[in-house]
Length: 406
Ligand SMILES: *[C@@H]1O[C@H](CO)[C@@H](O)[C@H](O)[C@H]1NC(C)=O
Ligand SMILES: *[C@@H]1O[C@H](CO)[C@@H](O)[C@H](O)[C@H]1NC(C)=O
Image (cartoon, rainbow, N blue to C red; front, side, top):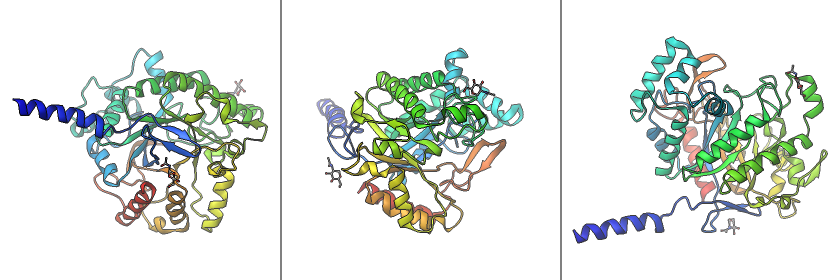
């Protein structure tokens, strides 16, 4: 009896004091991200999409949440970039509550295939039931990640759920056909409030891949610029900071998030950005994407990245801030992992102590651009999420994870 009591005390206190993962909140200091112990934190992780038509994170008809997260852990990774659509929150707030998984699959896949996929999800994930909602799947993924000590970074990927992105999909820019700015801010606020309960929500990306809204010529001509970017992004960051002051706020750039040049430089293109203007200055992180998969040389890629915003990492930068490459990736069915582009990022990102999340975990999507059970050749997992797609590429990726976390 005594021994048992003593053992439980050791377990309880041992679990909370000596292993107080995730050592939240994270803060920034110059170009570094630090945990509450003052140690550097660098993300080495993967994108787990959940912002497509069904608005449920992918793969659950093929594998359990626990086994998918265990796969991520087996790569040595420490983070996921979990994407969501604002439409899910609109449904919750305006539609009288979130919909069940069954309803979501029926709506996106139709009443023939929807029930079949839904049944497979329940078979692989018996912790879910007829009453489980989409948001509860996000909760479950975060809980499993907590258990396996994986940080969650949320990313608002789309307003209307669907495959991202094109210049004409109506989701590209503030005020675009589906991109209602008020609903966007409300959705961010909702998700960071929800995520505050998880314990391992470390950060959020405010918007994936802003781009020209070519479906609306006047919107494009009159508003696609850095001043519009500034007013909207800063307003959203303030909403996030008020709702959940603990998390890092990632600012993405223009042109599919390939440039943040004036932000790193402090001014240019009609905008002035001063980190010190913000009460949450120690929460601001920059994020870029890079898909220059046909680049000729590593030195070209490096100088492009410096020009696009990596200059923020230097002491001379007007705004010195952390940088995370939240998307890069390549075909997993061939030797791309050993090509110029991938090899360059494999060495350059760890050398710069820049965190990253590779696109993409998904071996397939419930539906992408109208095709159900769409095979993702860029997926780390194979089609049915049962094994890695390319063992040699994965071995290579593991060395990059190790170098990043070293
Ligand atoms: C973070 O890592 C860098 C590079 O290794 C090092 O220079 C810096 O001192 C580290 N910061 C902390 C707080 O450990
Ligand atoms: C284009 O955007 C403007 C706002 O700049 C809006 O007033 C207009 O209704 C939009 N046009 C279409 C066709 O959506």
